Length: 432
Image 1 (cartoon, helix red, strand yellow):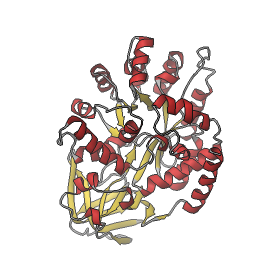
Image 2 (spheres, rainbow, N blue to C red):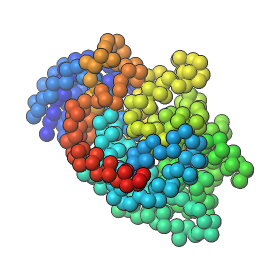
Image 3 (cartoon, one colour):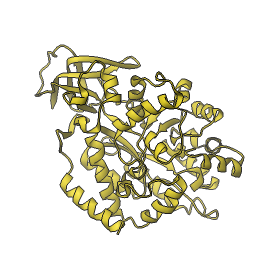
Image 4 (cartoon, rainbow, N blue to C red):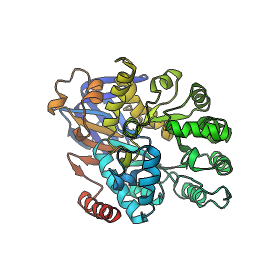
């Protein structure tokens, strides 16, 4: 079907940035954008949708999270990462069933889709549940089963997590006409050993996979790695061949100049998680330095237990203001840079070169913001308005591959009432 979105403002691709069109038109043919302009296209469309008072922008790409952890939202607040993770989170995670994880992922999908996320990268166990949910609801997802090892004597061949990860890749990579991609994942340096990470990274490279890791999230993690191995976590992964695969590195709060040089050499994409880093007191990632070096910096929410939401528009806002405040310089991060981090850069990290911007020939992954809300008036600068004013609740349409998943408060591919009821019951049982 051909669909014409008309009388809307559009943040369209413009060179390396964006161009703002007013009272414009965007045409969709099947799953692809086939027209953008301020004049009505001559071609006929099967359906026309009036989006007056709406701003269209590329769907947001959440590059790092643990979606089922919405069931742990609010657990262990006001603790350091190590206390939070090992003392509060993991004991509850040990009780999670595959059904709990399926419901948690569905609850997360409601939250992400309704706040403008069209594609997300996720790291969790029982990952086939996330694959099935993505295929059913229409979102795009890069799913990974994280590899960990807590026994130095465990062999690589005996590590069931690595086997599950590789099997997931072989079973589902490219499913749903490419909407679902399977990534490889090492949880972190401090939850694994070299004799596991080395061969697993080699398998990732041999199979043409992409890698998703946590990297230098806290000073404790960073310093203890140097103490154990005489090298930083980034150098540790580099030496083990992990960075020989396209790698997404979450957090990167304490990476050094040498670390960033290694990441640039290998094309590693850092993922900035401002809310999680602030809530856990981890610190301030050197985002401006990374951008200056030319690294492909992206954005993510992390899990809801350390955020406590999956709202990418909030991440945009926080990323914009916290670095200005930390550096005492209001010119550090421009709205266009931040929007690129949440869209175009995220698409590159996920290996999705056909999305991430509104341009003819790109996939129709589009969201619409309501410009008539009081806090969105007046609109002198759509990019600044999106970064500094917009709320997740301002999203009134979420489209993936030309299919509308959410519109004006209604979920079109998910049963919200059923999910909320069942996920709520699962959370009460887990916390009982």
